[in-house]
Amino acid sequence: MIQYRKILELYKQGMSQRTISASIGSSRQTVSKVINRAKEKEITVLTDEMTNAWLKSQLFPSQTPRGRGFVEEDWRYVHAELKKKHMTLRLLHKEYEMRAADEQRLAYSYRTYCQHYNDYARTHRLTLPIKRKPGELLEVDWAGETLHLKDRMSGEAITVYVFVASLPFSQYSYVEGFLDMTAKSWGLGHIHAFEYFKSVPEVLVPDNLKTGVTKAIHAEPVLNEAYRELADYYQTVIVPTRTVKPKDKASVEGNVGYVSRQIIMGLRNADCKIKLDT
Image (cartoon, helix red, strand yellow):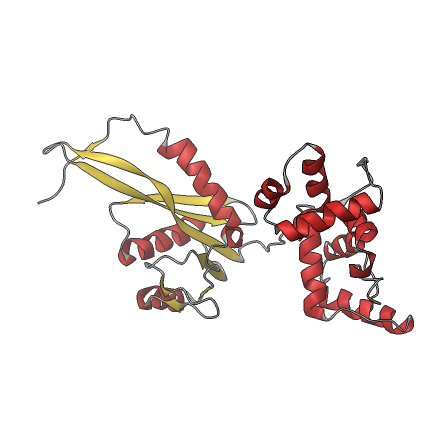
């Protein structure tokens, strides 16, 4: 998305078009075109109401939905409607298509409609609350930070890996340390979490770790066999997160951070010694 206002702001600060292009990620041709159009329209001062959308409509009216014959959508209304229970973009698009038909004008395809809404939400940094049912999900992960124990006989430092399981609805969490990150420890962490919560969730949401997911295929991840058998035994299902999508398990990500700050960092200087069995 072209940042019309940012281009003009930087240009008025005396920045070169080459630097503006490198700064905002638009081509020099685009930057030059925006600046020249602003000069033609005699836009010399940027006021608060001159938003990115407003500038686009003034500088390039033929590129706006109305200029191309498309029905314009009120994205603020769409975002407000999506907060309602059971409301979907699909339903809002259907209503939009009916409105376009009544006006005998063009309507965006569903895919384009979604893209425009995503652009609006991204520009305004908007998010929607994710509604959860009690006991529906259990988000699981290994903490990025580790603890260390010291063998009292040899003085060897032993790494402790921290398993975290969180219930998104209540933010209730279970934390346990393991001496390795094997599939066995991963499974034991789940079993102990079930025992701690005194229940089994409907869905397990792990990251795409090799202890749980053998191959992180976007459409259908391949699950570790032992992990799949654990889910079958406890009559639950596993739905791994999408790759590079931390918001898919935002609760456990947040609690991992809390555990790292409050527990792992809090024990960093503690004198913990163990005796390893030989």
